[in-house]
Image 1: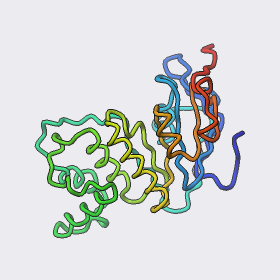
Image 2: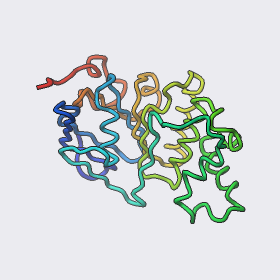
Image 3: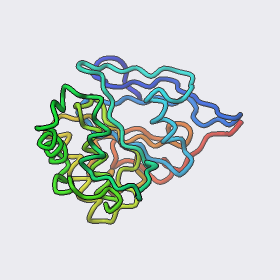
Image 4: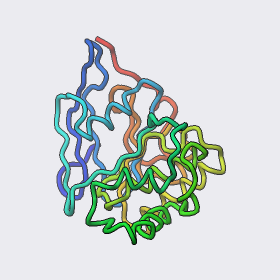
Length: 235
């Protein structure tokens, strides 16, 4: 059952979305609690990324999306894919400077800028990459850099779309550890899209299975394969 009202950071009610005559999402209801890792799971084409984009205000939809922010109302976002020309000779320092220059008061003058960016990178344990060319980063390293920039300034809600995709097992487990630390040590609220049930069992407080509509919402350990795959009529 979807809970309503106080205690939620995000409420989604009766959300439906149609594109090109195709129903992508239908009557989606979700609550996200503050200080939780809330996972979205479902098969390819289930509408998970479309839902994330709707939360960010980038997709037309019916229904309501309500936030109950108490601070800056900022949403941090790490996409599943980021189009980037890896042949461009740019370092991680240059990349973050370009991404974060809209926050001049935070970064300050050029002299302390390197120290500030090192501090940003240290949150995701990748400060050693500051002078590395972005084109030479592994998939896991690049994800950690993207996560670091998404945390500045501190968001009230962090949206992660398949953050460990194309990352090896060691890198994926390290990413899981970082997400748990962000929740426990820094109080971050995380809405995570994942296809990895083992990851969800290890770190999620709650899971919502989506296949165009919500097929399960509750503790991860009670989610079954049928909950993940159940679909709604296309009519």
